[in-house]
Length: 87
Image (cartoon, rainbow, N blue to C red; front, side):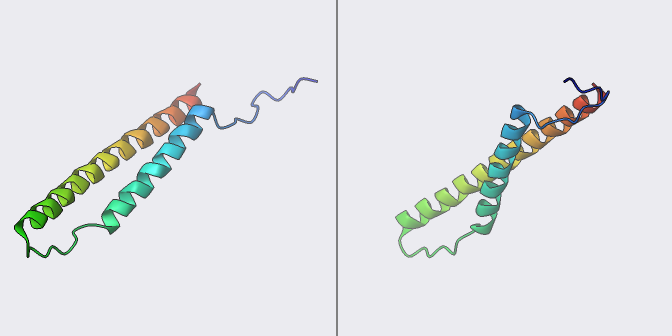
């Protein structure tokens, strides 16, 4: 028997579920990178000091990239929800 309700309940789409899961993973990655920021650098050996500083910069760039991707995914989810509301 078909429902006669003019406004049937909406379900969460697969794409929105995947974007939400991606946003959660990016948020967790961003939090781990924030918690592990700026290790204490002991520059006893110049070679190891350079490597440690280089890795610190790589993690800083990766953290910025995760943050940027997180905001893009959240914006897509927001616009998708707004377009579903209108349609």
